[in-house]
Length: 104
Image 1 (tube, helix red, strand yellow):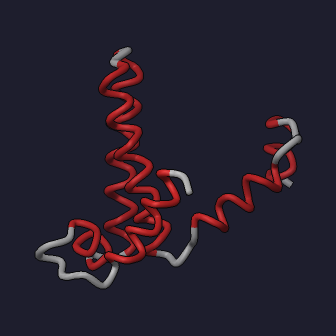
Image 2 (cartoon, helix red, strand yellow):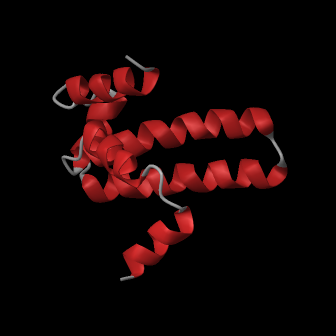
C-alpha cells in the first residue's frame, strides 16, 4: 500500500472523529465547499513555491495539496480508487488527444 493510499484510509477513518482532536474531522465538518477552498489555497501555495524555485517549499506544499485533495474528494464521496480508475482510463493516450476529447 502506498503512502497516498494509507493517507486516504486515514482520512476516511477520521471522518467521524471529534473535530476538537482531528484536523481532518474539522475540515470535513465544515462541508465540501470549505474543503474545496482549502484545497485551492494549498494549490496556490504550491504554485508560488514552484514559481520561486523553492524545491523544499514545493515539496512540502505538494504534500499539503495531496492531503487536501483527498479531503476534498472524501467530502464529496469520491474515492482514491475512482480517481485511479480515471487515470488508468487515460493511460496510453496523448494528453492533447485526451484534452480534445473532453472538449467534445
